[in-house]
Image (cartoon, rainbow, N blue to C red; front, side):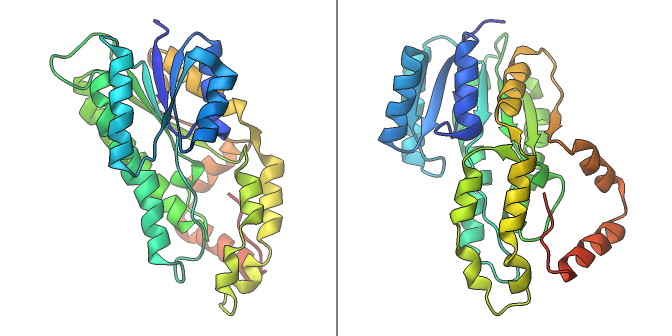
Length: 288
């Protein structure tokens, strides 16, 4: 296939950054979105002219329109090979007590922001008339939290379930243009998110609630998830292969325990609920 342009959101660290690196190493040029000048400079220094850094907040229409103009001018008559919707955040906490504004922000970023980016850049993927040959692909970075809900990750799980549904709807609606939509569902991945999680002290707001003794052990589950995490290259390699393959899988779970997720999903809800409740009553968190 032609090694053209790919747009990746959330490219300052982690999956977005490493996908940018790998795609450039394989002959692509990358529009990489970040949120500040320091990260923009880092991308330019590390990848030179093969990266076009864009300062963009996926919840801010003005910054998206500015980025759209840059992409349009750079592409000319070319089409984006792929759009990788990677940018996102994770809000955690028991739904009974979590602040609604935090839930709203979670959905604004992971759901509305992802859709807004997709709508904005669809014309550059071939989502317009007249229908073109060799349209681009959309790759949505979801999570195993989008197929299996865990306590205290409610807002994040809700947002990723929405991304899963959005992806199916877009794949079916955009099939008239020949645009494919791929979902990648990572479990724990070795990225800076774990250090950020360790520094998060927001669980103090749940002191005095029934969940306090459970959430007091949050560091144990963070350390366990970090220990079981796959290297970020596992996801970026899948991003590359999803772009290169003619008909990649519509969704792929990528975690050390993918078999376990599939087994749990096949079990009756009440049975799984019972197992989780038993764990919670022991004052422990449930792993992803």
